[in-house]
Amino acid sequence: MGTQAQVAQLQQGPQLPHWGLTSRVAFRFCLVYFGLYCLLTQIAGGFLPLPNLEVPDPSTLWPTRQIVTWTATHVFRVTHPLVYFSGSGDKTFDWVLAFCLLVVATVATIVWSLLDRQRQNYFTLHKWFRLFLRFALAGQMLAYGMAKVVPLQMPFPYLARLLEPFGNFSPMGVLWSSVGLAPAYETFAGCAEVLAGILLIIPGTTMLGAMVCLADSIQIFTLNMTYDVPVKLFSFHLILMCLFLLAPEFQRLADFFFLNRAPGPSTQPSLFVTRRANRISLAVQIVFGMLLLGMNAYGSWSLWHTFGGGAPRSALYGIWNVDQFAIDGQLRSPLLTDGGRWRRAIFEFPTRMAFQRMDDSFARCAATLNVKDNTLELTRDDDKNWKANFRFQRVAENQLTLDGDMDKHKVHMQLQLVDRKTFLLVNRGFHWVQEYPFNR
Image (cartoon, rainbow, N blue to C red; front, side, top):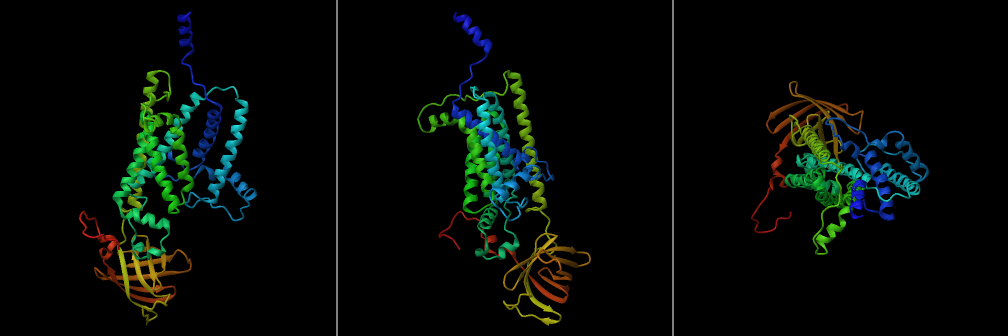
C-alpha cells in the first residue's frame, strides 16, 4: 500500500501549498494593480530603453487618457486642463490615474474572487508575475542608477546657479545642487541602484536584490518627500513592488534578524520543471539583463556628452561682468533700479546664454554664436518679440565687447570675465585635516 501511494504521488507531481483566502485575494489585487501600473507608466519603457528614442507613457494614449480625463472632470471636479507631459511624476493626471487603477484593481479582484473561488493557490502565475516585477524594478534601478553613475541626473551647479542667492533656490534645487556638487557621492548612490538592478536580474539573488532595492527606494522616497521632488507617487510604488517580491521571504527574514533561528531554504520555485529548461531561462534572463545594463549605460553616457558635464561649451564660456553699458549712445550707470541694464552675461552651452539684470533677475535666451564672423544672435524664451544681434570682439582672454541692436536699440557693452575658481563652492575642495569646522 505504501509503495502504491508513493508511486501515485510521484505521478501526480509535488503537492502544492494551499493559500489562505487573504493571500489569494491579495495576490489577485497586486497582480492587476501592479501589472497595470507597470504597463501604463514609464516602467513599460524601461523594459527596452532604446537610446535616442522618446517613448511616451502609455497612460497618455487612448483609451487610458480619455478615462483619466473623464474621471478627473466628473469625479474630482477638476476644472483646469490636465498636464500630460512636463517631467513631473506628481501631476494631477498621475494621481487620478492611480485612483483609476485602484478602482479597476478592486473591481477586478472582486469579480475574479467570485469566479475563481475553488482555486487553492496561484503557484504558477505567481512565479511568472514575480519574474515580470523583477525586471520592471531592475529596469528602473538600472536607468536611474546609470544616470547617477555617469553622473548625469544631478549635474554640477551651472554658472547661473553660482550667481543665484541661496534663498531663491527651491528645496528640489537645493538637493540637486548639493548632490551635483559632490559627483563622487552621486556615483556612489548610482552604484547602489545599479547593484539592486543587477541582483534583481539574477534569480538566485532576487531576495538580496529586492532588499537593496527597498533600501534605495526608501531613501529616494524620503528625499522626494522632504525636498518636494515631484516623483513621490512613483517612488512609493517602487517600495510597494519591492515589498511584494519580499513577501514570500518575510518568515525567513524574521527568523534570521529577529527570532535567532536558522532560516530554511527559499521555497520560491524554478520557472520550469526540467533542469535544461531552467538553465536556458537563466541564460536568457542574464543576457536580457546585460542588454538592459548596456543600453542604459550607453544612453546615459550619450546624454552626458550632449547635455551633461561632457557637453560642448560655448566659445564665450564663463560669467562676464558688464562693466560698461550704453543704449543709444547714453551710458547707463549700474543702478539697481535700472531694469534694462545688464549686470552679467553667462555663456555655458553653444546654443544657450543668460543675462542677469541689475535687480539680479535672469533672462534666458537661445543663442546663435558664429565664431568666424564674430556675431551673436539672441532670442528670449519669455518674449517672442525680443531679439538682439551683436558683433563681439574678444579684446583679451578676459575682456569682451558687444556692439549691435537689442530690442530696437543700439547697444554697446564692455565685459570682464569672472574667474570661476573664485567661488568658494568651486575652490573649497576636500580636506582630511581640518583644525576647525568650516561651515560658511
